[in-house]
View 1 (cartoon, helix red, strand yellow):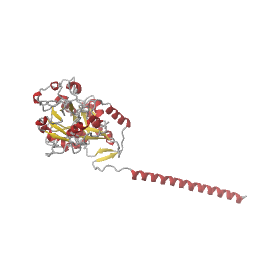
View 2 (view 1 turned 120 degrees about the vertical axis):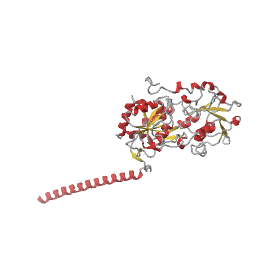
View 3 (view 1 turned 30 degrees about the vertical axis):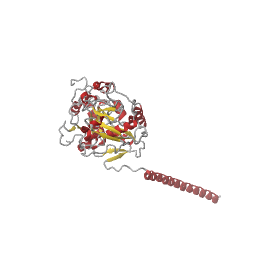
View 4 (view 1 turned 45 degrees about the horizontal axis):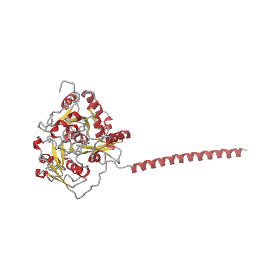
Length: 437
């Protein structure tokens, strides 16, 4: 009886030992599998960008914001075929006649824009069609080519009046007006009225999406295949300097410099260029970049006019290109939401006063919350297309693309002010109702 009990006890001990060994082996197997999976994900993770100037932060952006961005874009109406290609990412149609060459005449004032659009302030002519999807165009400044040109470009900023316009010999020839300025500054130094040119032009060439030839200063492009879903945080931004602005035009219909003055009461704003005390650090206006503003986390992208879609190099280059957060003034909130990456900018219209904005910028500088303004880089990229600071200019490329892609059925702008005017496109200054007018 005793020996039988010993056998039973030993059997129970054996079972317990086997169970313990099994449990240890089970834990070991789980650990092995876990380590294998960790190793697998590390080895298969895409390599981060090789850029020592940035630090990587794992952040995302809500899919709903991307969807809303696309919905706003697709709600845009009256786009030319070129506009659909640039802003809705429509496919480029096949060129019907590959042997056809188009002659582009820039009437009278071609040499005045050559430094920007053909030389990019480099001193040497650059092929304007090098990065263009079509190359079957020739540019001429010879005004005697008015009879042979397929399209004539009139730079309204320089045109002094109707007497400055040529006689029209071919009714099928396309006449297009060009302006890179807001409706407040369509003409330079002249008292022309746009309605005086009614019935002359067939196409428009402006920064607006709905132009026949859109030439925006920059564009937002959606990354179809974001390969590395981590955000680039700027490493070179100094904490002792916070806000910068560069300007040589010390005026503005929107009283932007008054806003800067108010902002300076609550935080330090460094002003480079002719409108501030830091004139010598950045002497080159448009032609030469200003590395001094690279250090700043925030840049005041204040336009000279509050007009829809008038978003210039002040944002695309001086802020986005330098990995700074733009503080914007100029367009409406709806326009910014349609044209810029979501959560990529700070709009002065969202703050009750310059003091409230200053408090917000100071708070961002002391927290990690500012990184939220860099999440968009996972899904969007920006493109500078203005030709300033030796960036690429696409003006002549866009003309050539329009000649190849757009519907060339004859149309005429009989009421230019219904398309382009301060009343339709622009809105009041931030301080409307206050003493300054």
